Amino acid sequence: MPEAGLAEAFGVTEEARAKINLALHVTGQRADGYHLLDMLVTFADCGDRLGFLPAQVDAFTLSGRFGEMLAGEGGTNLVLRARDLLREQFGALAFPVHIHLQKNLPVASGIGGGSADAAATLRGLMRLWGMSLPVEALASLALKLGADVPMCLESRPLIARGIGEEIEAVADLPAFAMVLANPLKGVATPEVFRRLTTKNNAALSLATGVSGSAGWLAVIDAARNDLEPPARQLVPEIAVISEMLQTRGALLTRMSGSGATCFGIFANMAEAQEAAAALHGERPDWYFQATETVSGGM
Ligand SMILES: C[C@](O)(CO)[C@H](O)COP(=O)(O)OP(=O)(O)OC[C@H]1O[C@@H](n2ccc(N)nc2=O)[C@H](O)[C@@H]1O
Ligand SMILES: Nc1ncnc2c1ncn2[C@@H]1O[C@H](COP(=O)(O)OP(=O)(O)OP(=O)(O)O)[C@@H](O)[C@H]1O
Image (tube, rainbow, N blue to C red; front, side, top):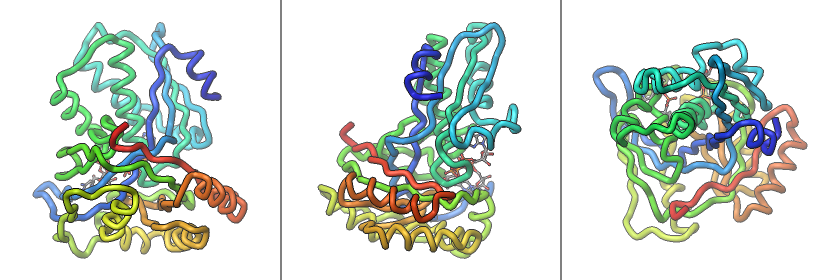
């Protein structure tokens, strides 16, 4: 469904922006097996889109380049899990709803598509149902849906610690011109964590007073994604696609989340768009998307 169509057909619409882990350090492990992380995160101005409409009975429909991939998953879709969890809070006042998901982001790709969809569902349904939850209650409900969901509720530049629930906004992170690149091989997050050999790495080092794109680029460049080496073992195409981004002029490339999506930061949007078009020409069967990330002062 085209964007205008979604807005016309559904009274309430929400964007589910792609989450980009600019840096991800694994700093420890909790007793329950979850890993402690220290992350610098931003969000792209591209993503999935959701529409919400009152209905006689609950309904869920899908469209978009990757919609088919989720068609057989029924009630396990994070959108429906988010709806059901929120409904438990509001009871009979949470009337039946038709939710439409335009799935534009690759699935299981390290840019938090499912988490962003779940967060957008929480936001959209609270608007449709005309209800809200206290901030802490909403954050803990989000965390039940996945470690990335609390930060996707924010969808602006932030530092996240713990397993992602300790969130601090980063007001001075600038927007970046970026290309997202994915070889369309899904990566199972637990498998990447399982392959980690070192779990007590140094925390992120963020000097105070960093400013401007060049300053932040240097900070990001000095950091890492500790999940990248184990993900590269699982998906050799990650090395290939990173090199393709560099060859097309990226100033910095890195993998996001547990992969396999890699991002390249470019000097400006014109260069990012040109690179994405050239990369698409090289590998039309892969995913390349030029995008501008949101700035902290949005
Ligand atoms: C890698 C990140 O994408 C970084 O933003 C997230 O930490 C993963 O977030 P997510 O996809 O929402 O992850 P969840 O659905 O909560 O967890 C999936 C699985 O990944 C592993 N997992 C996840 C997060 C974490 N901090 N430590 C882990 O070990 C666990 O085996 C967990 O069962
Ligand atoms: N709405 C949804 N969109 C994408 N995946 C979903 C959705 N609902 C359930 N899933 C399931 O969740 C799993 C993870 O998908 P998702 O796209 O969120 O991964 P990811 O981008 O690697 O996330 P993260 O960066 O948070 O690790 C997939 O295996 C998929 O089957």
